[in-house]
Image (cartoon, rainbow, N blue to C red):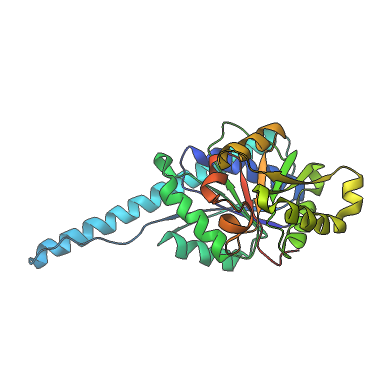
Length: 292
């Protein structure tokens, strides 16, 4: 892993997002690209007076220049802060580059993704004003449109580590490659991976058979107790079942495959959606299909 892209919005959430990115970069010796985009469309008032229109246009152009200036200053401040943190925590030689652009967020993110060609994206799930609706939609858009792993970081007080990782298995063919990718990414962290499939009682027998088949490709890791395979029968509320497992196993990261129906029908079979995963307040890692 050589390149990590970190989209930011300079909210309070930016600090913890960058902390996760730094920890990953330190392990892999990867370059970090901090990227910020601001909305740069000039809004004109509805008026029939040409001179008023010109003044409005001029005002908005000045406003855009000021927004860009502030964004550049904020990026410089953040860059300096992260460089100081690298020295303070002795994280090694991490190269940080920055870029600020104006435009529609999703479009600009796809452009920087295609230009920078990152191996991973680390993005917060909540933006300024704790707006999960806006920034959460951005992270979802990125997951749906890129071919690299995407880390989404919720609001946390500090870095939680990667000691215990849960992979939400839907028991499809693609799970094997995703687990291999997961093991490869976190090999430097010497952690535990819990491959878990949640289902109702009626589906449990079939799920056990399919889980055994999935486990057959990881005999060495299972023998070394680095990977654990579990079928969990849902009893009661879906969220309670997930929360109990996450709490009981001290899970600090949940990985999943974001392909069609994986979160709604196949992983948990009882109407557990992405909202349930977000509700755990644990970082999520979306692993695209076919990524090995």
